[in-house]
Image 1 (cartoon, rainbow, N blue to C red):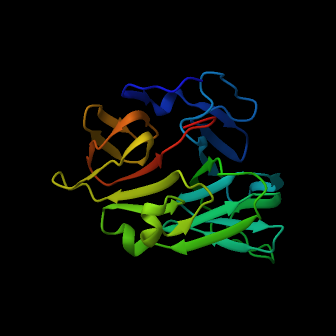
Image 2 (image 1 turned 120 degrees about the horizontal axis):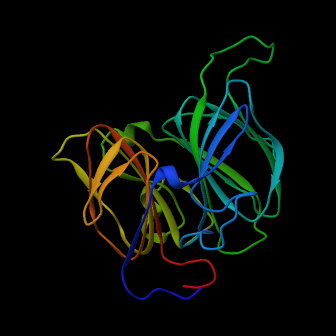
Length: 258
């Protein structure tokens, strides 16, 4: 794939995403995933996966392997139980940043946190989350896990750096990833028309509207599930039209080259 040298903005509407639907899962894929393959839609920058999943109570993804990938999970509603072969176990919920580095290989499961060990129900709600995969700097690193509560920081309505390997964000990053060219920012905006956030200026940027509705400079109205892929551009202002949550990947390299 050739490098684009001129600014380019590509809007992808949420309703056009590829979908996987089974009895317990409603999954929407921004890029090719699993049996859904489109050779013209495999990644943007270093971002290979941006899946929006809704999982029914008591259900989820059984233990399965990953390798050489930085996986960031961001919960929008409900709670998700993570367990892996390194002995990590935890519940992920809105406002909790979580990263798993697959590295040389790791097994893990992710399930809706709806049942206690004795089988009694905790709740009957689905869990709604976005899972994102980015390519690490190099293969074969030690697998790892990290999580951190950042709900207070998100209350500011500003663009909060959630996960990053970029040196410029070292002192204000919630969790780290093994990708020195990538950073994930999240803005949980209250919907004040005078309040907005400015996108980072980067060679590759991916903006995903996780909830609500926003206005983006030079693009227009974006609805829940919509995404924008920016190449060689950035700095646009994003303003929420009511409460909204936006996930922004800033990337300074792409798969296969700079």
